[in-house]
Image (cartoon, rainbow, N blue to C red):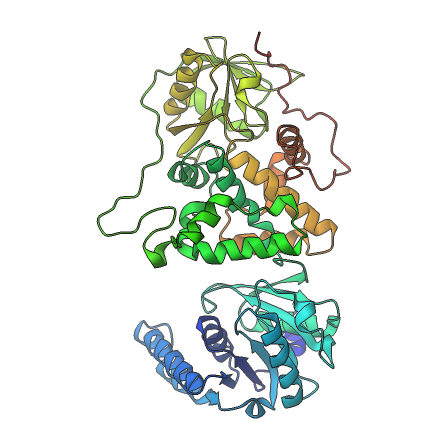
Length: 516
C-alpha cells in the first residue's frame, strides 16, 4: 500500500486526539500524538492532574529544543495544540480517544460507557491495556465494533512498537484505521488478535520462566544465567537484571495474568522464587534489592567463569554440528587440528580423552558415558561466552578438555549444572514453539511476531528467524526430550510442523549410555 492510500485511511492530522489518564503512559501517548501534528486533549478524573500533565509535556518539549531535536517554532506550535480537559464533554470532537488508566476492568468499562455518551459515533475508542481483555473492556458498549487495543511500550515517545489489538467484536475497518494511524505517527504497528498477553507479553514468558526454572533447579546462579543469555544467546539483557529493572511485582503480575487467562496452562506457570521476592518486598531497582542488591557500594555478583585449561591439540567432528558448525572453522583458526567424518546417527565432537562434546538437545549428561553438553548460541563466532554442563559420570579430563577447547576459541566458559536443555537452548525452543502456536491460532503473522519481539523487548532476532537458522524440527525435538524428563505438560510441544521428521540430523543418539 502506498503512503497516500495509507494516509487516506489514517485519522487526519487536523482531527483531535484525546488521551484519558495522565500517568507516564498517558503523557507519552499524548506527546506522540502531538508530535504527529494532532490537536491533543488530556483528561484525568483527578482534579488538576491534566493541567500538570500539560506542563510536564511542555517541559519535555523544551528539553528536546535544548538538545536540538526539535525546532523552537515546532515546540510553540505543538504547545498551542495541547490542552487540558476539565470533563469528558470537552472531548466531544475527538476522532480518537486513547485510555491509559489503572488496569482495572470495571473502571475501564465505566469510563468507556461514559465516553460513548461524550464523543461522536464515528470516533475510534482505544485502550492501552497490557494485561486485560480488549473484548471484555468493550463488552458493554453500544458500538463495540469501533473499539481497539493500542498497546504502546514505555517510553512511548521512544519505543516504536504498537500492538494493534482486535477484540472479538472489533470491525476490520476500525482495526485498519488504527493501524494506519499509528504508521502516520511514525510507529511500527503490528496486528494482533485479542489473546492473553497479546504478542510480546505472551511469547516472552519463557525468556523469564526458563531462566527462573534453571535457577530453581540449582543449575546456575542469576548472574551466570544472565551472562549466558547475553554473551552466548545474544539477548540485550538477562532476565534477572531485566526483571529487576521492570519491577518484580510488575513482571510477576503479568506472568500470573497470562497464566490465569490461559486457565493455568503449565507452559506459563509462574516462578515460586520470584513470588518470594515480591512477598519480601525485594522488587528490584526501585526498592534497592531484587535478584541483585543495588545498595551503594555493593558490587554485582560475577558470573561463573572456569579457570584456564589446556586445549586439545586435535578433535574429531562427526557430522557437521548443525547450528554449531561455525565451531569447526573457529577451531582450525585457533590452530587445533580438526578431523571430520560423516555420521548418519548424530553429530558431536570427539575429544582425545574419548569423551564427547554435544550441543544441548534436551537430554542430560548423566544419562550417557562421558558427555559434556555445550549451549546453543546465536552466533558462535561473535559469542564471548559459552556454557558447558557435565555430571558426576563425566570424566574430569573430558570436562577440562572441553573448557580448554572453548577458551582456545576466545570464549569465557561457564560451567552449569546438568539441567536438560541448558539455558539458551531450552529458552529458544520454548519461544519458537509459543510463536508457532500463536500463528496457528490466528493471533498474529510470523512477520509481525518477529517484529514485535525485536522492537518490543529488544530480542536479537525473532522466534521465526531462530527457527529458520536452526531448522524446522529443532525446537520440537528439544521439547520432546525436555517433556520426557519433565512430563508436566510444560514442554509438551503445541503442534508438529508438516515438515518435521521423526529424527533430526542433529540428534546425538549414537552416544553411549553409562554402564552400571
